[in-house]
Image (cartoon, rainbow, N blue to C red):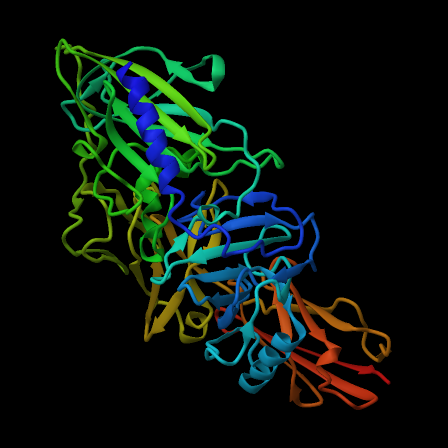
Length: 561
């Protein structure tokens, strides 16, 4: 009875807490029903999802409207990330964000293009004043698209508070139908030190889930001793789409008492990197499955609400405990997992032996490793934990452990390339070797004399690679000396299979033109409505440069009336 009463109490608080936000202030940013492909705070690669992804029926060009009265306070256009994005600040102090846009409403588009041509740059960031572009609720601001790091047509929509912290838009009444309980995909249990064991093992274990009627679950009983914690792999599904979405809240209880909570209402961008300490990072790098740890170790995330002992269970000999996990979506649909724990000490249990190397990483100290021509510098507070690092150098390749340890910030890798001749040095870059085939992936590289300095957040294999191949350029929708009077766009394909594209510059008859780069399709596009040209015969010139300075020049003539 106590557990039922507690659950009802928590449910009441849970519902009341959702009503502390204006419910009728923000309207839908699209003129179609809200169907989501992504929810707030979903677990993504190296970050939490900061808004909701609204489906646009598999197409681009739908009207995007201002969610409330306000003014455009920021415009950012990037090849990556949010692509084309607008930020609207509202009188109540909140800011809404609209990302992956195809293009902007005509007046806004003209304002932005004027600035792009002045700066001769497609990528741009502007901060209009409060009186420059004033909007009314429901006013057209843009058209939905697929720009930047989008994986398909949709609108990414955010609501941020006065401190620029993203909040769950569902708190403000912008939601989608959901009558389905969250799905529990797997449960893990972790012995947390060398004196802790589960079923006589010092290693984490995956528990067998048994579904019950009503959508709840149980597992096999476990025998344990010492400090243990649990992890969960879970998703939510909404009614109108099959996507695997994030959940809204996770709570744990021990013998009926609250033990731990993950509350996905709001977070700050400065802390989103700590997602890699929330999940079992080693499991993720090997299986791509995100197991959320239901205990806190060296993690400052504000979404974590550690109620008792940071969620860690201290299991004593000859005791018993009932551990429960409640997973909820925004509509308070819930799934429960029940785990029975028996405290049992076994003198035959042996702790795993940690691999000891000459290189010990103390997370509270700077560590400098060097062998041969290669040095690696880890600054204080790079890691969440102390550990022995596997560090080996073989000619121009360095093994910096396995990618099993989460990092908080970048570390530096320095290669002395003085043994290469000067001409060859200019074509070198640092690459991480990825996957089974050890594919070289460009790592941001700086040059200082004979030194190449790379910056990365991922452990693994790094090496020196030479790129002597210039980027490839060819016309996508026209040929040299062609008449294209009826064309609305000029399209050019660019590609670099080695270090990757760094920059490009295009002119027509010597005048700079705005070309939009879509890295997903490797396409540059010029819009003739920009009205840069007035001649019949036109000379197009495009220079594309890769990350080590190789460049290619494409030149063609076209005719237009």
